[in-house]
Image (cartoon, rainbow, N blue to C red; front, side, top):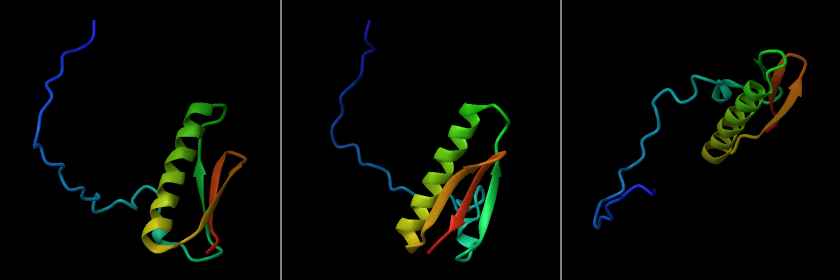
Length: 86
């Protein structure tokens, strides 16, 4: 049975404020062109590897959109590696 929802009018969308330490997970904002970081993932845990890849990609997109910085991501032995390329 579907849940009952109230349909409401005139509810404003709250403004989005990024977390003040949004770069705490992956320090992409501190990297210079040519530098890289290694993100370890548990051996044989494809879900954790995929989750880390997805999270790193989201951070890379934020950095590109906010600052125009470019990164590339590759799976490597034991995890992932992110390089700043531009």
